[in-house]
Amino acid sequence: MSITSNTGSARAGSWAPEPVKRVLRPLVQWIGVRYNRAEALWYDIKNKTDTTGSVPAAGLDIPDDLTTHVTGFQSVNEHYLRRVLEEVGFPDGSVFVDIGCGKGKALLIAAEYPFIRKVVGVELAESLCRVSEANIEIARARLGFDKPAEVIHGDAVAIDYSGGENIFFLNNPFDAEFMKIFIDKMEESARRQPRKIWMLYGNPAHANTIAQDGRLKLVREFKFFGPGRNITVFEL
Ligand SMILES: C[S@@+](CC[C@H](N)C(=O)[O-])C[C@H]1O[C@@H](n2cnc3c(N)ncnc32)[C@H](O)[C@@H]1O
Image (tube, rainbow, N blue to C red; front, side, top):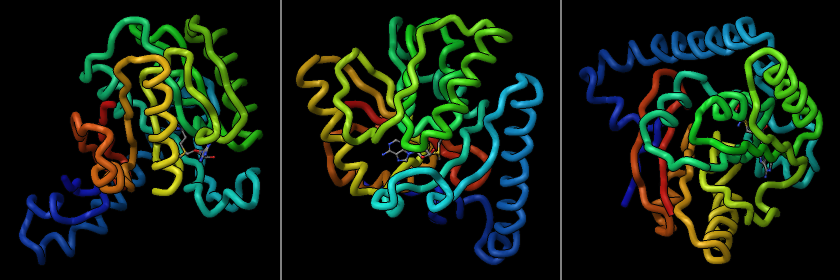
């Protein structure tokens, strides 16, 4: 099984002949980046949160030896994550974990859904953990956030998951090597506590690694506007 990455051109190519595509692609990318920035700003304006920004791995307060494995910080688009949460059909009592939660935007969004009973964020950068916690407090005060929430400062591929976690959201946090270790962790967890587990993989840069690995089943690919914005859903 092979998956066309959202950064690849094969699928995107079907919307126009190649010469037209060559001219239009940079423009579409430019509009996509601006649209996603505008969405991020609007989310914070309407909710009085702090979830925007873009920080490369080298600019994060994370251990030096991990920098080469990590992609950097950028928040998910609210509408895109909502569409996945609304269309996949998750069971009541789900525990949503954001692997590399950044500033916690996905936690705030997921917690709104009645089928989610708890949200957990795991984040390597301590400064981002503090921002996530502050955002959760803002959401508790202003947005009716009333679910249990936990922000864990640590390496998501070094944690044992055994608290009934069943939805793992990964917004392209790390490289293919870490992805394989993370799948080991999911598998171990499912062996200890048998259950259905989903992986929602945003900006799925290593989707082909997952396909070749073969342990996760591809459920659905959500195509969204803007570079690096697609979300691919896998199941274990
Ligand atoms: C692209 S950001 C996504 C932020 C958030 N999930 C969102 O969508 O709004 C990826 C985040 O993953 C974090 N990260 C990368 N590798 C990690 C790891 N092994 N353990 C915990 N966090 C990690 C980075 O520090 C960064 O904040």
